[in-house]
Image 1 (cartoon, rainbow, N blue to C red):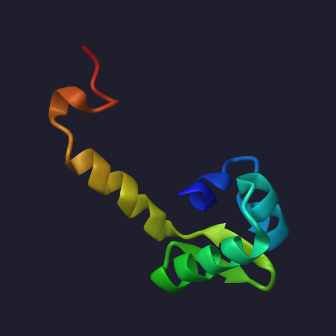
Image 2: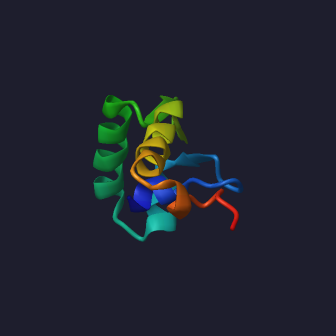
Length: 77
């Protein structure tokens, strides 16, 4: 999850080195994780740059689907 969290509004694209620095994990570990996330469709790769794929939104939808209406963050009391 640290690799996914490394991407944000300020860093929508990351190189392997940038992702390793942001996560404080070694490059070999981050490389394996990014390649796995790419194979699973959660990250896309163009050359040396990685970016979150639209599939990551499925994680948020799955979380929200499991909440009752009162627990949802967009519900106003």
